Amino acid sequence: MLKQACLFCKIVGALAIIGALNWGLVGLLNVNVVERIFGEMTTVTRVIYGLVGLSGIALLVSYFTVCPACKKS
Image (cartoon, rainbow, N blue to C red; front, side, top):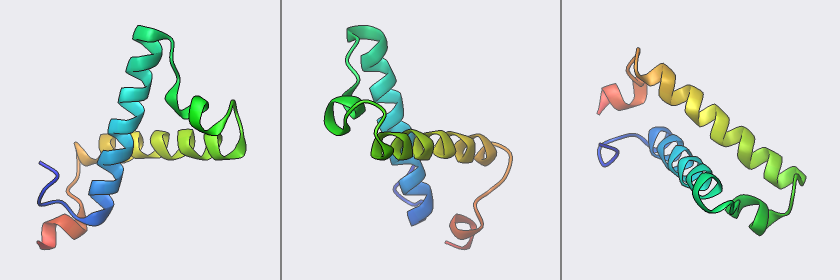
């Protein structure tokens, strides 16, 4: 699915996957990989959570519209 996608869509997909895996580990094992790597609620951690959230919004929008960059390919 992401093999033919544009760079933006690949980044959005990767961030969404990272976020989903992190939340899966939090739910199953009570392990937050992002906070273990970057510390609890540091600026970097907040930026990562923000980017994951924005990627989720971008994926939600992609269900209703087609990415202009991917459409050209």
